[in-house]
Picture 1 (cartoon, rainbow, N blue to C red):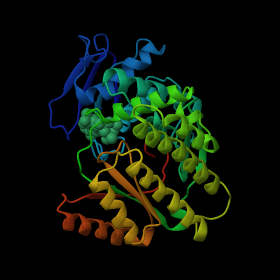
Picture 2: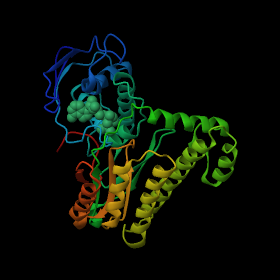
Picture 3: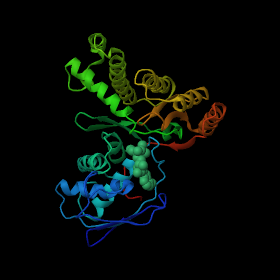
Picture 4: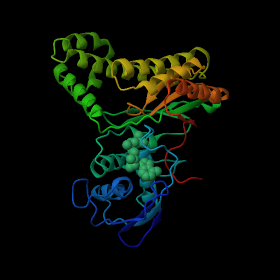
Length: 354
Ligand code: ADP
Ligand code: MG
């Protein structure tokens, strides 16, 4: 990305095979307004639009070329990757002083960039998502998992140095179509909001795990009791599993033996809860996690928005290829399209490459 001296933004991406997109920061605006920006360009130009509304007036225009290796719409935050890389690049060329560097990140400044990236996604791209993807991309740390409390945006960096323990996270892209637009995401959200209202709390996150049995009892007389009970049970137990994993990872012992087995069991239990109670998996996701576990993964679960997208499996680094081969074989048996694989370790946040 290169700064310009006017207010023009020019974007090009080899993946979309489109000609250069040209727009002007003085005329672009949210989806549904005359200044609406076409699909992927909205995720990038939109960040400048949002930052101007956040008080950084008169930003310079820029020329940017996009090359991404994040699978599009695969549940791996390709949209946040666009927003967050644009955010740190604009921060640098316009001297906003928010991001710091990937090696020495400024967390408070990055939290503000997260807010702007979320606003970009919600208003410019018109996707009603929360801030988890953007927080992960901008506020993570090498060798750590990110614990995010969505109530106040606070984060904790939890030791998760897979490379040090010869472990890896195998990402399985099911290639099954996922879409947040077919109403499922909104339906889950609406059910959680109805349940919270009946229970007299602002968010289901306010229900402590100890109080879950009484909460489910209260929901059992609602018209749509079956749905509300399942969705609530998923949310409250998932937060509890997350906290238990954080406590486990913070205990100072190496991630091996019984500790590793327990981390894997928590991942497996998450997938079960997403499958049975939240009902947002699909056959491709279920087969992927089953095959990965059968091939020796310590734990496996879907990730992202569900209904397709990707699963992750915690594996010994030396077995990555065997586990991937086992999943590919299971897909062939089931007659699914071939999956794709990435092997990942928790890395530094968005920033200029050294
Ligand atoms: P996810 O974030 O889970 O990958 P989304 O539906 O949120 O899925 O975002 C996918 C959208 O992001 C694509 O439809 C496209 O508009 C945009 N996008 C992501 N990566 C690229 C890319 N490399 N080139 C063009 N557009 C991209
Ligand atoms: Mg996304």
